[in-house]
Length: 383
Image (cartoon, rainbow, N blue to C red; front, side, top):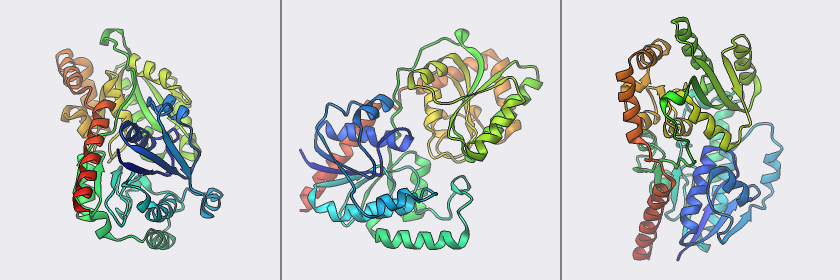
């Protein structure tokens, strides 16, 4: 049994990254002495209820960062995630000596020793993808922000290359290689849930699109796809499940308001979402260069015939050109063929059914345990 220091800004729901962190903790706390260091409160019962883990009964020590910068940054009107991460990394360097291994699920970390770090998308891939850019990302201030954050983190590329890096997709691993010249092992995120088994005949002619109200999710593209299909005589409805809001959320709601066949739902419980996925026939994801796509993986696990943009790590989920599109017109063509050609549709459904189960939490936990144990063994030999 080793002493594991798991350092993470937050493990609280919601958020796909926090879900990965929760399941990494599940894997580690089952066989090691784990201390969790976060910037937020720690409520394992809430984590378990949302992500499907069983952390509450385990002996996990929690420490909340008690530093001057935490309450100061909490008052800021913008997220400042990179700055928060840099300060947390600096804090982790000071704690390294108290543990046998530092583990995180918050992208690549430059540490003095070797740690294990799960990368959703490299934080130092710059310039950032258009999907990450917001109104406050102005070129001059952004360059200064990067420089200050890197200085505070004491960033050194050699330190990153010394870490054991895990990537959420092979596509992300390729980005890590380009940015850092470091290899990363693909460990797909866990997809948890009691997915409802329901035959195609018992499902509704509804397209389901899931995400948050943020411009990169491109819900207006999904609306355009379904609207074109309806004009071609296919009586499809569209349900968008999204949280958040802001200007983009208002724009999507305005589009939906003029289309009676579009429904927007927010604040669903996990069980209600799983039931909804089990009742819909189709899933469509609009984002370009999604790093993995937890919603896409869930739609596939739920038995939806799911179409994604031909980019990013999401193509590794569906693994078929027939289920990936390049633009609205291409998506319409591919979905329409699945609607009118029963033999083709059954072939696609069989293809996706054969892929289900790849993202089971048990397999994820086993892989994390193997990598952590191997890293500990190497460190012991080196010492």
